[in-house]
Length: 65
Image 1 (cartoon, rainbow, N blue to C red):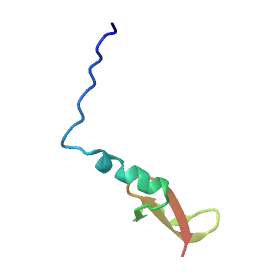
Image 2 (image 1 turned 45 degrees about the vertical axis):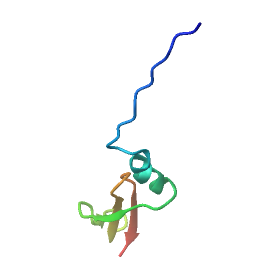
Image 3 (image 1 turned 180 degrees about the vertical axis):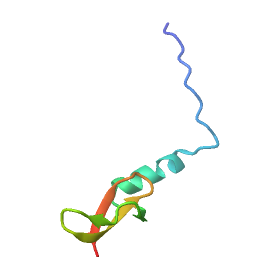
């Protein structure tokens, strides 16, 4: 006979769908963009830029203007 393997019980406070909610949303392109105020001027172009940073995953995108 084989040994009986005990698996850890999942945490009842944290559901699986709640845990993966932010990760899967960003993977599918639904980021939660916020304006990041630390960098507002592009030195190479000499123009003002707006830097957007995703609240969930930390990805950034820039737009001129």
